[in-house]
Image 1 (tube, rainbow, N blue to C red):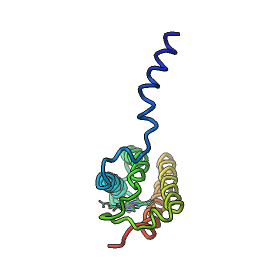
Image 2 (cartoon, helix red, strand yellow):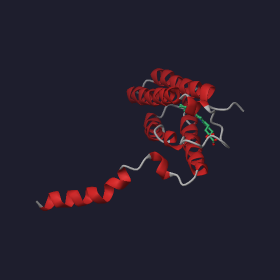
Image 3 (tube, rainbow, N blue to C red):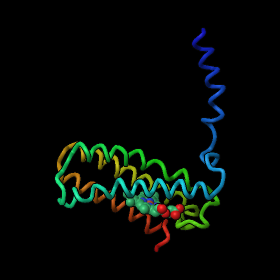
Length: 152
Ligand code: HEC
């Protein structure tokens, strides 16, 4: 009985926060833009640092690669909440990220799936498999950038 009461108290206190839309996390469009750009910068860093191993320039340290891919997996979920309505101006996102929301969402999911596959490949400890999965992640970055990011 006591447990149930505690649970309902906890839910009453927490639900309003849980149910808030992603939008509410950002006070202004600028905050959403810097959030997503920061997340993408981190993604780029954690993706790019594996390149020497992929290229065979540094030895394949499976434990380090696995740990890094775990971070990348978490990061791959983050930027998208920052693409709130009305936050295109002043960023390098194309209007298509909003006008073609379904396609943009699909590009996110392709990328996230490619990162999951990268994680599976790294689990095998087989550098050739890692290489191929790494290439697929890179292709998913590029595909999204081609359609939804302003070329510089
Ligand atoms: C689903 C689409 C999508 C995917 C997948 C994606 N990006 Fe991007 N990326 C964007 C968009 C859109 C922007 C522009 C964001 C802005 O300016 O608000 C961007 C911006 C960036 C930036 C610049 C951030 C800044 O500080 O302005 C970097 C770096 C970047 N992406 C790297 C990557 C890498 C590396 C990957 C893959 C490992 C990747 N992105 C995957 C859409 C994507």
